[in-house]
Image (tube, rainbow, N blue to C red; front, side, top):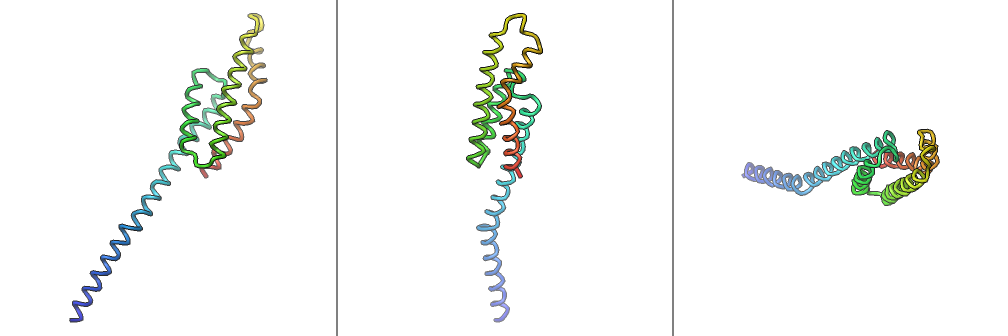
Length: 146
């Protein structure tokens, strides 16, 4: 009789253990996997965005405008902090406004003024605010990943 009670207790313990595994441990593992996946996606998107900002710059090529918009859209989608989302939107808005101003100023140049030095001077004049926002945005992206 003692063996039957012992086997029953072991069986009941196994069932309780399996229930805990299914109901609690699996859920915890799924949550961990989800967080890991989100962290990896954020790292990929934020690193690509930072590279685009630092290497190409906001005025590198007008065809890059759409790429920048897509990267920022991806970053906004993955961001969880409202402040970071607002900073990403502000950066994009500032870049687009600065590009319009740059385009207008370059159109006003006479053919004699359209040399490389004059263009670089105008770009430097317009890009000051964008450059300032770039540094703070990259810092916020890095903080968000860590």
